[in-house]
Length: 105
Image (cartoon, rainbow, N blue to C red; front, side, top):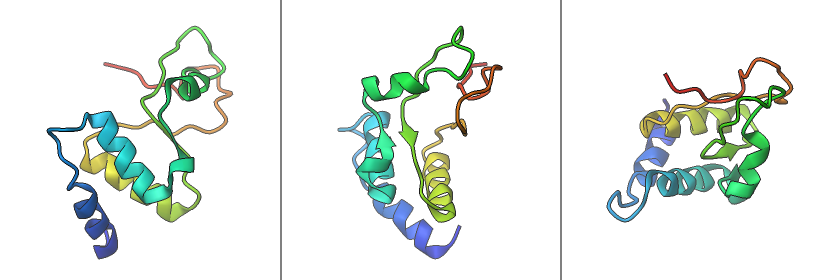
């Protein structure tokens, strides 16, 4: 992680853990990095992403992000790692195996 990303993470981490839920913190951190228009967290927006081409296994994500560059992808993954939040990369969501859906084990 370069110094710029580390500084960003330190600034983002200043949000109070006592007054915000993990989803609120995640939303704040991601929108601060890549912009509000690139982060979905509203329930109705997330329904489209609750499954791939296999609709038998539906599980809506807590957030969906649309990074616009390799650098933004790296920054998003840094934030997720820092917050200990797992992620599932997703392409078009046309697979028939449930691979684009989070799983609990």
